[in-house]
Length: 189
Image 1: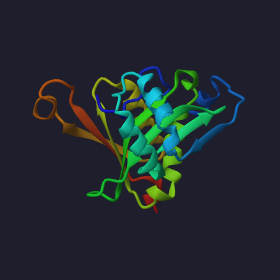
Image 2 (image 1 turned 45 degrees about the vertical axis):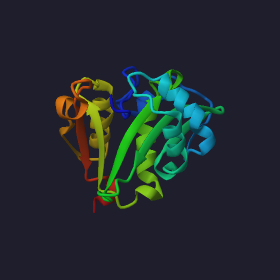
Image 3 (image 1 turned 90 degrees about the vertical axis):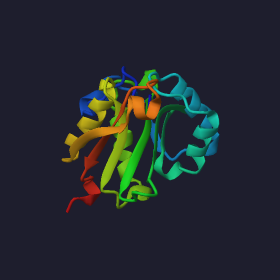
């Protein structure tokens, strides 16, 4: 299972009402990760099935080498949300969202949608015209999140198989479908 998958229990509609469901009064900080966040990111991913767990070292590299395109959502000193993303070297016009995780304590608040919007505002994403991600067919939470994101930003979402069950996973993993969302708001004139 590709690591971009949102937990099935998360709120994926991205609505403002969703962000008020739990009504937390503690301030939320959406920021670039730092290497010291690696262990908290690893624990958050492990507690967020159906996400694939990456190695702690992979998460550490994301928190350091890819920090400008990743987001940690923190409340009261605790990491409660995570997005990892990067600009593919062969497709500089794109931003690829690899992983989205939301802690059980923050589900129902629209946090995943807020983190995606924050990602678009990052200087490191400037000039990107397309957001891509991969999602298995059965992951309705991820499809809901990215469909709502496209709708909210007046963009189109298209999908096509990227990594196929038999050809790429030797039958051991479901096909990963690439969702492409374009044009991104910064690319619209």
